[in-house]
Image (cartoon, rainbow, N blue to C red):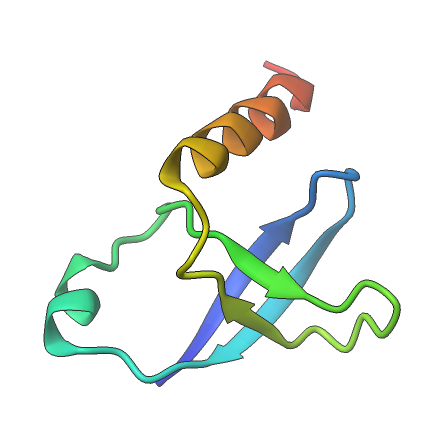
Length: 74
């Protein structure tokens, strides 16, 4: 399945990311608009290809999401 992401990095860079992922039916049914998912990307290349970072600790994802959200104007 090809997924398109609006990626916001810890460094403040935003870009549209594309991932080609194999998802189980369970993972597919859990996808929702606006959901935050960790991805890996290649900052030196910035070719817009990303991959789901399935091995990242959920606590780290929450912390980083909170950091990014705190930078956005309210």
